[in-house]
Length: 380
Ligand code: GLA
Image (cartoon, rainbow, N blue to C red; front, side, top):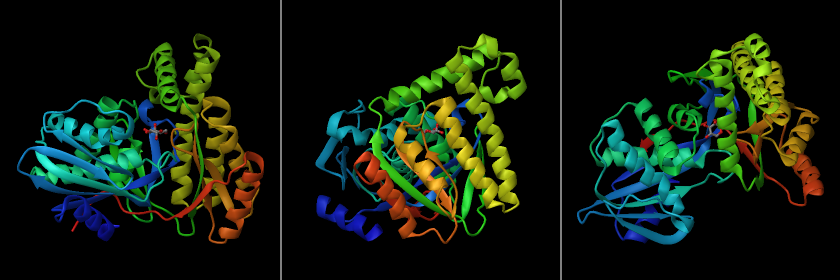
C-alpha cells in the first residue's frame, strides 16, 4: 500500500511525499449503538485501511486527491466550507483541519495530499474514521505538533460530529486509533477509557458486505440517537448507561413503545459487552459467539436497525458449521455482517452462504476474510 501511495502521489504532483500515515478500518465486535449512550463497546482494527501522503507547499494552497476520484480539489487555506457532491470526501480531511485548533493544535497551511484505500466504503467498516485518523497524523506531523493518541481520536470524532455532521460516538475513531493485532479494543465511552484485550487464538473474522444502504441511513442513525436521548431523559438520567434493566422496566410506562425498545437494546447490549469480556477472558469462543448473535437479534427486533438482507445472512451463517456467531457490524440499516468462525470455516463455506444470498436477493455479497491489525501510525 505504501509503495502504491508514493507512486500515485508522484504521478499526481510530480514530486515525492514528505509524510505518510496509515489508519485501519474496524469491525464493531459487540456494543451496538452503546457508544453515544456512554456505554462500553468492543471493536477490532482490521488489516485494511486508508493511507495518506502529504508534502508541504509554500503558496498556501491545499490540494487534495485520492485514488477513487479523478479530480484534484484545490482550496486556499482559509476555504473551510463544507463541500458537496463528488468533492464531499474532502470533508473528512477538511473536518480534521477544522478540529485541530479546537484541541490547541496548529493546522498546516499549504500542502499536497493524496489518499489511497483498500477498505470497502459503505460496508460499515469505518473508512471515514480511517481517513480522519490518517489525515490527522500527517497534518499534526506537518505542523510539528505532538499530541496524545487519545487526542487524535477525539479530533477524528470532532470532525465527524461537527464538520461531516454525523452524531456518532467514539467507537470508530477509538478502534482505528488504539487497534492492536490479535487484540480487541475495549472502550468505556464515558471516560473515554481505552484498553486492549487479547483475542483468543482460533477466532477468524469473515465480513459479508451486502452493498445495500438504506437511502435514509444518516437520518435513521440520527433518529436512533434522538430516541435514546429521549429515553434517558424520560427515565431521569443523562445517558442510558446510568440506568439498568430493573429501572427501565419500572419506567417503561413513561416511554413510547418504540423508545422503550431502543432503550432495552442499549441496556441489554451493555450487559452483553460485559458478558463478552468475561467469556473472552475464559477463552470461551462458543459463548462469545452466542452473545454476538444475541446482539444481532436485539438489533433486529428491538433497535430495528437491521434489514432483511442482514437478517438472512445471520440466519444462514449461524446455521453453518464452524460459525460461532454473526451480527451486523456498525450502525446498521444496510452494510455488512460479521461472522466469527473457527479455522475450519473456509472459502467453500463462505461461497455457499453467498450463493444462498444471491439466490434470494439477486446479487452476491462481497466476502472478506480479515485479520485483526494494528492501529493508526505514521509510516516511515
Ligand atoms: C457507527 C458510528 C459509531 C457507533 C456505531 C453503532 O459506526 O459511527 O459511533 O455508534 O455506528 O454502534
